Image 1 (tube, rainbow, N blue to C red):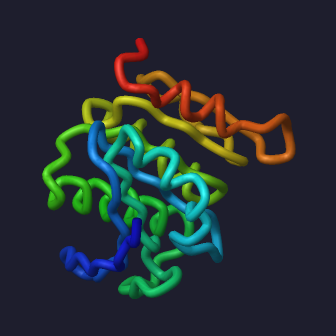
Image 2: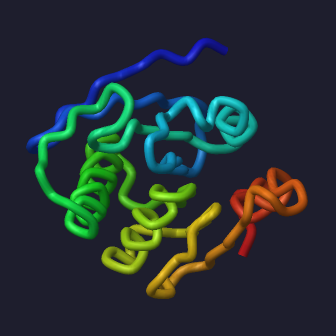
Image 3: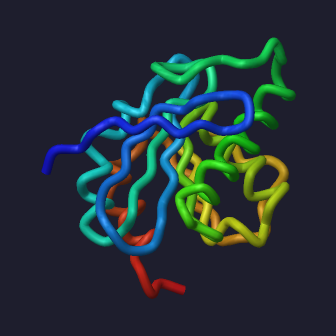
Length: 158
């Protein structure tokens, strides 16, 4: 299946995204200095049972950086970008998977907007403060984690 880039205009930034699959929505957030391509191998596996949305975060890849903010204000802007993106695509609640910087954004998203996040997966990032939703923390240098991730996000899993 060929996946095409889309451009989504938010209040002060335009994000490059890719969408694929159908089913419960999952937002994939890449790490620092990364792009949405980091998820190229995992996205098709998730898309078999989910609607996968993966943006280039603000200031990364082909997305603009419309801010001069530093950490943690930049993380907060990325949280708002993620929430606005998913809302603009018609997703009121969703699972979020983040790696490195994306894991911090995902954890902050879950902490600041707990009614919007169904599940949180943080890869190579510690989710602080603890979110009020089911959470899976994975480390990429550990045992293979793709199966654990797919099981955790499986539709109908409680």
